[in-house]
Image (cartoon, rainbow, N blue to C red; front, side, top):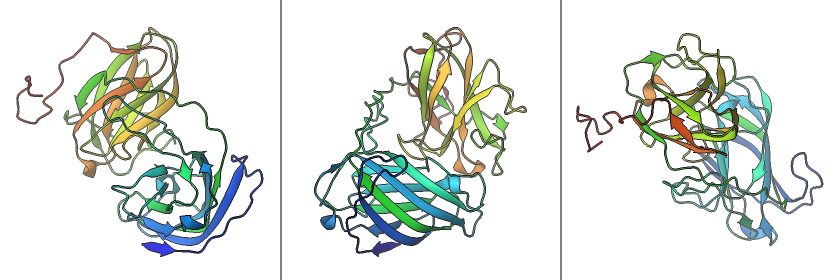
Length: 321
């Protein structure tokens, strides 16, 4: 769904989480489905300047198909064609207010329009600053099934806040695997204390240690299916899903639903950790994945390197995989 609106510049002072907001547009109410609801923000009327920060707010109300507000995604692009557009932010989940339920809630997205997560392999950057006067499209999306929701009182603010230093580049993949192992579990819904209702799903476990104690960002890239990443400390029991769970995430900023990223996971050198990689749902299918890391040290597999599974599906594990 596409809409065109007329917006005008307004000074905004000290919005929560956006100290130097300089432009605000009120987009009204949007009916949001699993196909982008899009609004042309008439970028030609946005004052000149290099905008580096954003805040988006909306009153979220569930519609049909059992949506959750955690499944809401927002983005800003330079065109309606999101497959080729330049992204200024997103698509990302809310940074505040999202619930693992269909209860009404107030959602907020706050952040910076700067390159964030990258990998050596894909060379992907999530966003570039927005130049006032250029085209600007707001995109809203629900990601579950055929669900829909109403986003009321949608507001977009742009600012000149100084972004933090980029977090660096993820390592080259330190493990390649495949989720089609024949082992099944009912995964958690991230760290919510709830279990998925669209499983069970197949999974692979990867035991590893890190060479230096500190905070790590970990990513899985699954180019052929919608993946999910869980991190456990010490041991993993697929029938006791919350014990030892220290981090979990569904969609990540690297490749959207084709990636999962967990940030700021504190890990100790010499401790065994288990990455559990699976599909988001039973209908998501299986496929190959890679694990990447960003932190003070390097991950290494417990027991040393392992031969990857049958990645090309020809029934033989050989040099072609």
